[in-house]
Image (cartoon, rainbow, N blue to C red; front, side, top):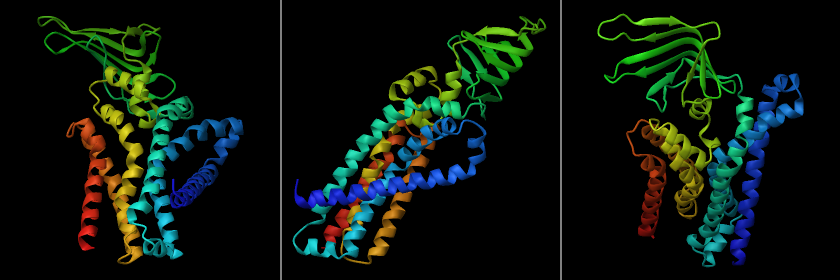
Length: 348
């Protein structure tokens, strides 16, 4: 490794660590002040660990691509401000020689980001579930192995409670053969116990439906739908490992957004590298106004994240194949980088 590469790498990692530490400290200060009363109401240290033990790794993971971009721009801005960029280019250093160490650092951080998502975030997933315990989220209908569908108005995270629960088992003709309606359902080791409601069995050949109110102890129903299925669909996409996500996809094949999440975990860590690939040709070009070029790089980064959100939504709606929805932003960034490089080469 050349002296120039080591010098650039030191400046890059110094800027990256400074930006990351500052961002996390600012978040801690703001969130801590907002939630200070809640933190002091219980064991302060235990409550802080439960809350920030999962929030800080998640925030760092989500912001890592932007931090990589900002660290790269910070290095180039420092070179321009001290007129070192002019000296380096005059001495024969090409933009490629200046960019390669920064891209190598971004690739290294991409690997670290993937390891964080695959190992660290799943390890602290229990903390997030404990922190969200009691939170009410929407309960999407889920099919079980016997052909029934379990749904509800809401699900209480961490408590295994399904409010306004409904279970439907369909007959051979596709109609509702057996329906359970209850105020709530509580998870059991083998299924769910429905409380305060009725079970309705459809009558055959014009016979009236049989409506049976629950006994005092409720109605126990065996089903393959488990609380983790509702929790996995409502939790952040970052807190399942690849193996856990594959298992969840097999359990809930109707939810294509899970497949998009699976491929996205390999595309998202490369976002910082993609942003640098697009931005460095702009900011390392000595011609034109530097401020406008840096502003253009930030706009391109914003466009990347908007495109990522749009592709993820389209993939979840089955408008795009999951692989394309996950990797389309990376492909577009490479196309843009190629066009910028061609334009700059043609001009010179």
